[in-house]
Image (cartoon, rainbow, N blue to C red; front, side, top):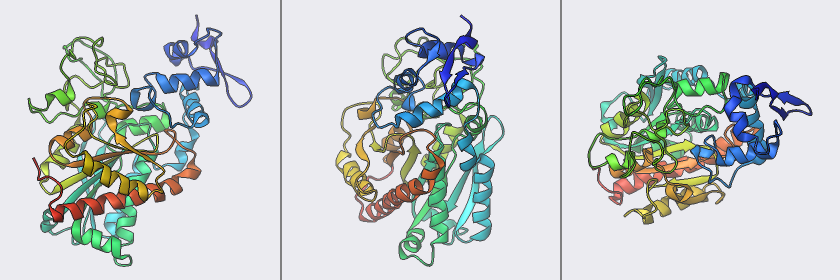
Length: 410
C-alpha cells in the first residue's frame, strides 16, 4: 500500500499524510480505511510510542490539542505555534541579556556542547554572583526541555530566571532568595532536539546524535537518545536505576516498562548509561557541585508533581518529605495538580529524578499543561502559575537545608 494513499481530516479537507510517515500511518489506521480519524490519532498519541513520555498511561490530556499537534507531524509540516515560543537562539540571547543587565546577579555558563555544536546554557543566579563564595549557599537546579517536543517546559524556567533577577531589590521574597540561594536555570537541556522539533518534526522527543552502534555493538543508522532514560552515575551500585535486573541490552523484548533498547524507539535509553553529552553535563552540574540540594525538572504534559521512585512502586524513605513539599507547591497553584510518584504514572529507568534521589538530592518533576505544544495564549498564564510552584520549591530547599531536615549529600 502506498503511504500517499493515507489521508486525514485537516481544516475541513482531507489532507495527504507525508510519504515519510508510512509505518506511522499504518500503525494509526486501526480500521484499514486509509483515512486517519481524530479518534485513531488520539488513541495512538495516548497509547503509542509517541504518547506522553513514551507510555500510554496518561489521562490528563487535551484531546483536541494533542490531535492537532500530532497532525503536523503526520502531514510533514512545522507547527506554526513555534513562532510564539522561544527558539534556542532567542533563549540563549535572553540569558546573555540578563547577564549584561544584571552582572552582579547572574552569569551565563555553558555546561557543554551538543552533537550539533550548540551550547547547553545555564544561568547561575545569586546575589554577588561573581564571588566564588556563592557556592557555599544552598544550590538549586531548575531544568526544562529534556524532551524536544515539550515546548512549554522551556518557557517556565526562562520565566523563573527573568523574574528572579528583575524582582531583586523590589520584592522581599526575590531579594532574600538570591541572598540565600545559588540557583542554576537550564531552560533547554536538549537544544538540538528542540530546534528539530520546532522546525522539522514537531513530535520529535530525543536528542539528535546519530547512534552509530547499539548496546551490543551492532551498527545502526538511527538518530537520537531519550535523555531522560539515559541517566547513570557510573557506579555499580546504581546501575540498576539505568538497567534493571532482567533487562538485557541485546534485545528489546525484555525492556523495562517505558524504556527501550531499540534505537528507533522514542524511549531509547542509549547504547550505555550517560552516553549523551547533555546527560553528562547535567550530572556534572548536579553531582559536581556539593552545595546543590534540590533539582526541579519541567516536562509536559499532565498537571502533575512527580517525585521518586520512577523505577519502582516501592515507597522511598523520604516520601513524607516529598508529599509535604509537593503539597506546598500544589497549594501555590490552587491545588490544580496531582502529587504522586513517577512510577504511579508509569515505571521507567534512567530517570534523572532517581539519580538525584540516590545522591540525597531532593528532586521533583513538574508535568505542565495538557498537551506538548499548547496554544500560545496559555504561555504567560502557565508561566505565572507554575512559576509560583518553582518559588515554593526553592524556598523549601533553602529552609530545610538550614534546618537540617533534608539529608546530607551522599
